[in-house]
Length: 504
Image (cartoon, rainbow, N blue to C red; front, top):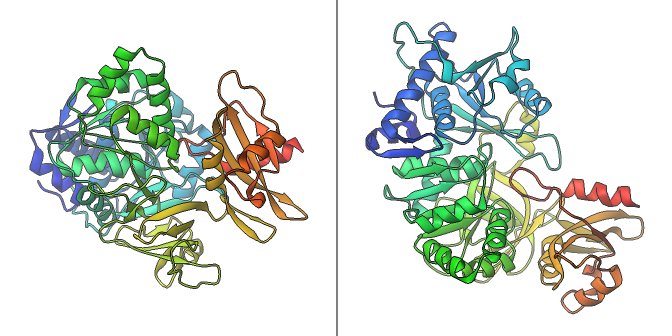
């Protein structure tokens, strides 16, 4: 029986094709439909045979076949799916369950024991790998495409995480924008190594693949050696990851002998597209990856609230340090501090977006939702410039990456890009820390390369002065072994600011 849910309905076109490969086996689209229907039947039975009518159903599953089957099962029963991160501790899960008023959590054998403390009178934890057989078949409800479908929580780097609500129609818009722009076909085969409680892993990879009739191989835990062997083995056509993953793949490749390096590089060159996102891609990483693989990574820009909005082209020039031009169906403007429209090249402004891909609302937060829009444009909080070719370059988030010091507005990302050129610096993150005289001052946290243990503030400023204006030079420097990061590998700048404040 075909479905009114666009993504589920697509699967009926590809019944005999392999949809998902995981640690257990390869599953066809027909099996995905069959198992998701069984889960939907179970949920309907729990609800006295009635349509869930947008009841929230949370679920926790490792990235494998069951993840997709659970999410589709929730949808087909008429519910809203609320994915929980596999690294989320119990208090974070309790916050999401409370915020969404979820009454049931679906899981698998992997997390049954972990979630058991939550199993109580007003909250059921159900293991879908041990579902009882439904005694009689229940007709699945007709789920309209404009129903709420998914609540994904923001990473909460600057405030408590907010639940971003999308409908089935919005999800379709997010997927079709990407499948058109990046040339997805039923012959594509992608390797998936990312978490599945963020748009990047859910929409860009898993559901773009399933919409296209392609094959998605899911690797629950990133392993550089296994990923490289998959590249070398042939068959893969696509790979999408965050800059941290490409850094780890480069580090693994660097430690091999030349024959092994050549074998792996020859394998990866056969793929058609490699994409980077979720954090700014250092130009040094882009150039090194091109040297190793022959691929110029396609950098793009999006966020939980808008899906993907801007991308470098599949065919055409991919500019290092730029996120590209607006995707099909997406309108972008830049707006200055006084709400003026920015039209000139190289003038900075906030990115604002209009698109069918933009989210519906923040769950349970009507005032915050309303304040996030101006005249129908979603205010991203990301500051960018646009060049004469219409390509955008991100300068950072207004709240954490734009440092306001002595009347200047300084891009932390620009300074980071310069510091990574230092011969002894492996990684750098820059923040603004409060200062009575200047408002904020520039502070740099650095990780040095092996055996380069100490870089003084004076020597760093002296070196950087060849590349940066005096007002952009770091006023403080801190040596770290690791930078604080979230699940997607993005540096959590508020945590970094606290480290500097604690060090005073």
